[in-house]
Image (cartoon, rainbow, N blue to C red):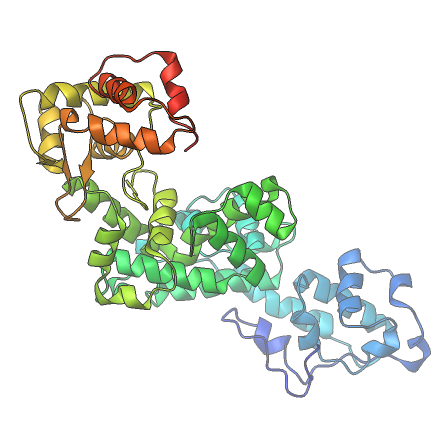
Length: 446
């Protein structure tokens, strides 16, 4: 629905001249009656200009008569170049548009000469950490800008010279700079009294609510907003699309989360990751609830949803959305850490805190980051992890775990093997003796 010219406000922007001389509701198109029947597609206009007029349901020049200029500027993909092109045409078809071209170009000329000023604290911010539209992001990439500092000192004229960059795109950049100058991004005041985890969770809720209903449901189903995460195939069957298309949508939304939150979101995520790695703690639902405080009652989704998403956003954050998830398949790097843990546990008994175990194996020349250590404990079936105390999780020596894992194998097995046989095989595997290849048929599907 097109707005009423009499009630349409001028296009709000801080760029000088654009709102003052171009988008006043009093400025309207005037077409001479002799040209009223000329069809828009038959006129010497670019495809972009023709589509802009068609979106206004203007099919002839006569239908353009009396329409306010601001209605044209408010259209999507209609920037200063398209606007000037239509005005030049109407100058030839009417007597009351004389001087329009001069007023437009003179008002835009002052804008072109202005230099872009980026605050000092924001010049190192990467573009991917900012809420940019797709068009504005492409324009800045074409200018070979990777941080906001690359734009400092450049002229707006450099932006207007980039293809597909019109007035609306420049206005978006100006509005973003205004938000930075007001301290909206990167300011500690934005977080207030919330912890880093609570702030991240609230921004994720705002991002999910900002999506379209279809994309929102796809995202929640895949990441596990309510129940367990659905596979790409299951989500695709639910929405009648391919699994590859589902993957593309989810990946796109994950990238957008960071830009939606802004630099403060990235700083909070980095702060949370460094704090947990320093304390050698995994992010579990119990710990998530504890560090969020009273805010956790206001969250709209399940705790594993936030933990899983934060783990995807920060590859160095050890996220345990459902606690320990052991598996018998390990990478060579995991095997190296597991062997070191088994040697360190020799002669020790009882559950030992994570931080003490990590300091023990990392005391010498053995290289292992806290993240690697936590990931090994998450997937290693040889060690039992106790998460009764979220801030002081413990791990038991491998000798205490064989019977527990043998029982887990029995529950997962499709066959009915003799319990003593399974117990012996599980004990042999956990104590370090390689079991026959046929043992893996007992595990079943995870």
